[in-house]
Image 1 (cartoon, protein in one colour):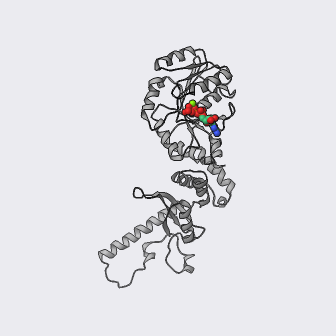
Image 2 (cartoon, rainbow, N blue to C red):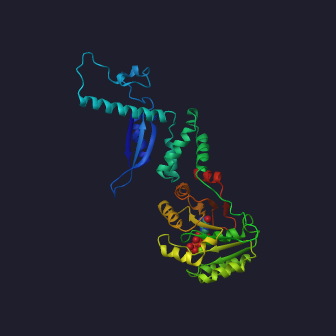
Image 3 (cartoon, rainbow, N blue to C red):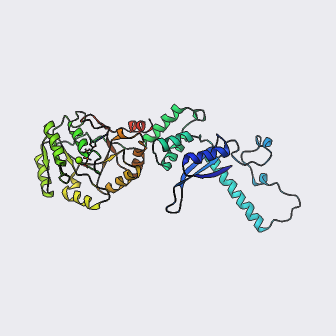
Length: 372
Ligand SMILES: Nc1nc2c(ncn2[C@@H]2O[C@H](COP(=O)(O)OP(=O)(O)OP(=O)(O)O)[C@@H](O)[C@H]2O)c(=O)[nH]1
Ligand SMILES: [Mg+2]
């Protein structure tokens, strides 16, 4: 028997399914149900009883030996000498038949699937993965597990990690073009760690710390912003150009034509203010950049993170840096944003220490971080 359960959270919907079908309920699908605007979110879970996957007619004792697939004739034995059926009765039977076929097709589709409600709950409630995305993942993982592995938490996590890793692209930004400086710019909302990341990249020997680096900032917007980079540049003995007018930007790049890498810092921008984006485009000839990294913080509120990502994607950004992963345990956020914007991840930052707290993105490592 297949039934739908609606509740304010997935956990409560799973609980309802268990109360109806027992612990062996098979979860077929979870999704947000459509609500009137202003109504709180509700989740609809479709489940079926494992022991009685199809409502086979007959007494309980007969059910064990009942056929798995059965014909309409099994549903309603023909009555001898019964009068011809009316059109209404035929339509009703046809509808019943349609429902049965629907149930059977669900059963065939999901009968090989294992029940992983705990994994679904873990992803949604502990890791902050979107409901739909978590259901998609759980279905994919359950299809790849043997029934004997249903309670093997280690195996489930391995499969989950492997599946999550396929959701990301990464990019090694440390590869430099021959004979010209690599021009890299960091953009993003305010306070996400753009300037700190530039300093880490410029000084960490694993990244550009061994190369000839020039720094440019166009962040003269906030009081003391340029001073922040100036202090670091002086400490690290790196050349810095502060650009106040769009016309000065090309001159600054020309000054660094003998460097191997040019890192450009920008002012934090509100994703809601499109005028800010126009300023950025006016200052920087973005098409001339080798890489434009959007920096987003893993600790941002999930909806704001996704909105920011979408707004900044209107610029020609082509890499993603996820910062501040040390500030949250709900790294499902990364998966949500990775699914919504198709940008390869270049770096993660995981603390305030310069130059240590930055590392190159790796698919397996991202997946491991999300679920552990
Ligand atoms: N916990 C943690 N803090 C970080 C990380 N990266 C940067 N920060 C801190 O975040 C704060 C803001 O960093 P900035 O580098 O100034 O951020 P920004 O994006 O340049 O800020 P604006 O230029 O004002 O938009 C500082 O206190 C940094 O030390 C990180 O990976 N983890
Ligand atoms: Mg800054």
